[in-house]
Length: 216
Image (cartoon, rainbow, N blue to C red; front, side, top):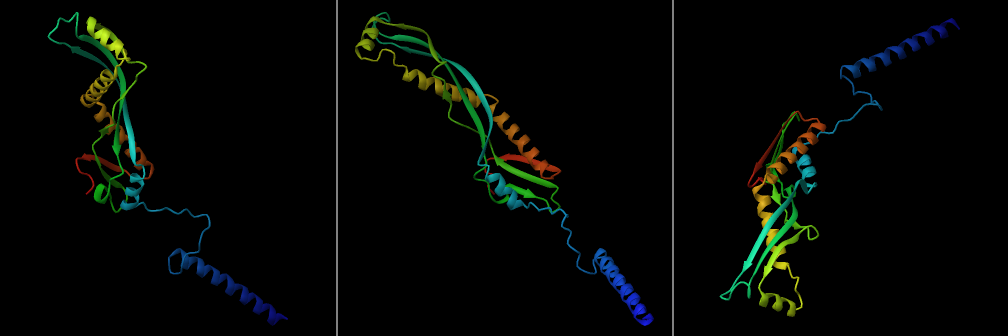
C-alpha cells in the first residue's frame, strides 16, 4: 500500500509539472497558444476594403442652399408698348443641392499606410444638382401688358402661362448656386464627415484631397 501511495504522489507531481510546462510554453510562444474564448479579434481594414466601403456610399449630399432671384422679361414690337408688348417682374424662389460622388472611385483613390495609422482619400470636386423652383413661393411681382397682348393671351385660352418665367428663374437659381459658396461648403462638409468616419475606425492621420480626375 505504501508503494502504491508513492506512485500516486509521483503521478500527481508529474501531471502538475506537465500542465505548468504547457502554460509556460504557451506564454513564451514555444507551444501554440491556448484559445481564449473571451479574447477580442481586430479586423484589418486595408485600402481596397476601405475604398469599397466608401464607394458603396454612392454619394454624399453635402450642402443645400435656398435662393431668390428676380426675373425681368420685356417683350416689344414696332407698335407702341401700350398696344403690344409686356414687361413682367417675376420673383423666383428655389433650392439647389451640392454633392460629392463616391461611386466612380477606384485604384489609388484611397491609400492606407501599412501601420493603418494614416489614410489619404482623393475625391472628385463637388457637383450641383439641377436647381428646383418652388412654384408655390415663386410669383409675379408686377406686370404691364399692351392692350392687344392682353387680348391675345385671353383668346389663346392660357392667360396665366408662366412657363418661360419658371424656366428662366430656374436657370438663374442654378447660376446663383454656382457662384455661391455652396460647392466649397459641400467639399468642406464631406471632408469633415470622412475624417470623423476614419477616426472612428482608428486612423490617426487623415488627408482628404479633391482632384479633377480622382479615379487613379
